[in-house]
Length: 145
Image 1: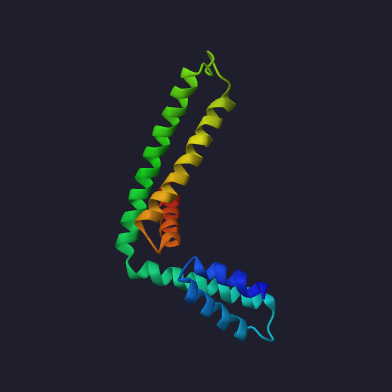
Image 2: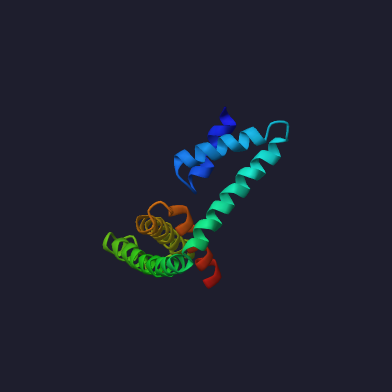
């Protein structure tokens, strides 16, 4: 059943595959005779409760990891932006006064690369709780802006 497979994939982001398969099966059994919207609401509610359970289990570790991730992200962005500017200067891509869109493009490239590397860094430090670490990082990042 396609619905079970998708629900299992969503829940496996927050728990083990075996447990996600079991939860998806239970949710499908409970959803018989109900609307599909109710099933997906139950899947989302279950995923959020798993996320909250893991967050409340060790909030100090996650807060520290998120703040370190913020520092790593900022450092990587600065290093990558400088690297892009230096490399473009070495290859003769800089003209006397480049248009504004060139600076925006360099910033966007550096930001995307820094975000990707920060996500990998967070994932390596929170094995089995990668989604939780990324959510904590996003909360800290949004609150710091």
